[in-house]
Length: 179
Ligand code: 5GP
Image (cartoon, rainbow, N blue to C red; front, side):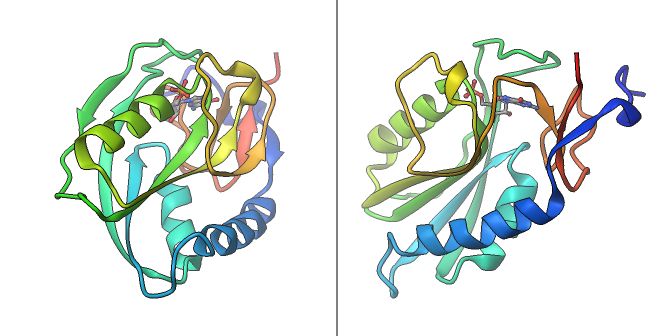
């Protein structure tokens, strides 16, 4: 059982707001690529599982999906600044279009790591970064996603793929625990 209760959660972004945002975000990101270009969508697990699945359904391009797994929060509600690359297995993406799909950019360490890794190791034709949430105020490194859905305050959020100690990923909305 989680040591935090679902009944204590306050909704920050509703299911409807997420749905609408993803539709407009997908249209915006679509325009960055030529119509006939193939794209590799990289889903960064586990947090972006819901966002990525809903995003690609609205994304009108030929895509292939790949999955990588990174952990940075562990069981904490603050970034540990300790990135753990659990699985970075990918095909050869040299000269391919790559779209990284993240749940949230907080300190920016994961986004920096991923961007550098893709540029150095894979040398893609085009590299685009989209994140559902953006905690600009928590940034420790100078990086911004090319596209994001919602800017949020420096609050620990759960739901829609985001967890606390493994729980709450299945909530259809984004919520937080009031102090
Ligand atoms: P960053 O490297 O930018 O500090 O953090 C990126 C990762 O930390 C995200 O992909 C996510 O897994 C986790 N994270 C950052 N902020 C939150 C948050 O408010 N809630 C949850 N559940 N995870 C977060």
